[in-house]
Length: 142
Image (cartoon, rainbow, N blue to C red):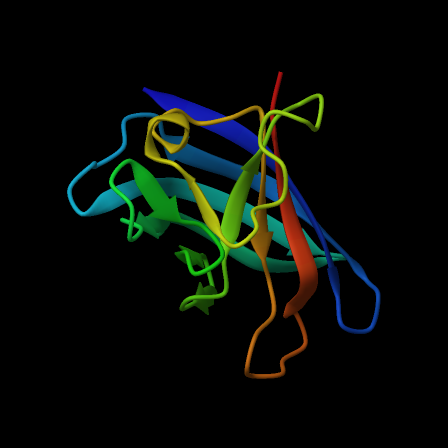
């Protein structure tokens, strides 16, 4: 089973990035929580950034306390973007179930179920024409 998300982000020169992302609903719970990004289609203006299957992953490693995962250091790959340790966190639709993590650990049980909305920290070391800055937001498609 898959969960569909609408993607929104901005480039470093403030152009809109948008798209659709399909994520496998069942996570791998070994050593943390990880999801497979099954497919994505992402565009910036008239340029297609990514249109591919098996487009990446989202991985939260186990934290120092049992039952927690490292959120601000999460690794993720989404099409052409490959971010190591830049962070990702789940955000509840009403904004208060999953507050922005501080100091960066979330409850593993919560991260084992895909949320209505999540955010990926998009601070990248390399510059590029379609590199997102700030946050990439994924909102569950209805």
